[in-house]
Every structure is written in structure tokens, then in C-alpha cells.
Length: 251
Image 1 (cartoon, rainbow, N blue to C red):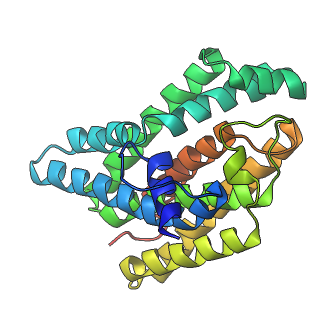
Image 2: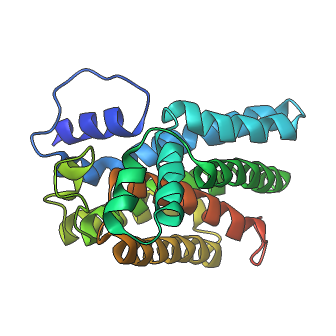
Image 3: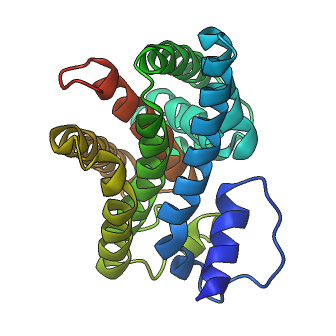
């Protein structure tokens, strides 16, 4: 079972850990929320230090850039590839998949990346005004949970084996249910005094997963590694954005 944790850490982060990878990569999906909680804690701590230094703008940069560094920019790259393919592929499935596989970043991908980073910085800066460090961590965790749910719900879109095929193949409802239950256990203690905010954040992540899943199913008939990376980034942003709107008080 711990081999799944090793695979999850190696896949989702820049950290190299000793040990052997899981025989079935899909077994690492159980551990995605744990790795998300770890990454979220690191980014929240970075934000806390920046705020204590009296420089909120730099603290927000630390969260955004730190998220890229800790993940090797893998998820952001997935968002760029997905944007290029989905909106530059003219609706043709094979053309979309071919564009997404191309390492070059096109105009749609560049626009998506710039928009993502700008929006994240603005939203995080707003969250820091209220000291909503738990929300920052929650967004990162829910982003990793969204990957599990999507991988467990849709087939792999490519006919040949790809980077994420080992995670999608063999994934099912037990992975989504277990990862969701673990995420709730990890998150609830931090929002026990704000149950409505907790419901709002989890609901917003569900909306992103449903929207991304429906779009990906229509465009390419399933998911790829790029789609899984993209849904993680969009979930983070959407969770932070919804909290930043302050429909429900953050403190």
C-alpha cells in the first residue's frame, strides 16, 4: 500500500523519495489527497511567512510560483495543452489529441497560462487579507481529489498507452469514494467552525470536475494526463475564487 504513496509523491511533486513504485499506478490514487494536503500545507506556510513579513503581494507570488515549482509545472502544462487542443483542434478528436501531445505551447495555451497565473495571484492576495490559509491548502487538496474523481469516471482517451494511462486504467468508484472520504476527513477539522464554507468549497470543486469531465468527454471521449493536470489547476483556482468572493465569511 505504501508503494502507492511513493508513486503518488513522485508523480505529483518534485520530491524524490526512496522505495519502489506501485505495481498498478491506479493504486496511488488513494494517496492523492494526502499528497495534496502536504503540498497545500507547504504553500499555506509560505503564505503565512510572507504575511508575517508584512508583504502580502510577495506572499501571493510565493503561493503561485511555489505551486509551479513543487509540481514541476506539470499541471499548468496540462492546462496549456488542453487549451491548445480543445480550442485549436477544430472539433476533430484525433487532431485535438495530436495538438495536446505537441510539447510546443500555442496561443490558446499561452492565454490560458497567463490568465491562470494572474487570477491565482489576485485571488490569493484577497484570501491573505483575511488570513484564509486553510482555504489555500484546501484548494490544493481538492485539486488532487478532482484528478482522482475524473480518472475514476472516464476512460483513457488515447488508443495507445500514454503517460496517464496507468493511472486511469483500473481506476474505479472505489478509488473515487476512498479518496473523497479521506479528503473530507483531512479537511473538516479546519472548517468545523465554518461548515457552510466547507460545503461551498467542496461543492465548487464538484462543479469544476463535472464541467471538465463533460467537456473532455465531448471533445475527446475521455481523459488524458493533460486533462487531469488541467482539472487540478482549475479546481484550485475556482475553490480560491469562490472563497474570495466572501459569500460566506472566511473568519
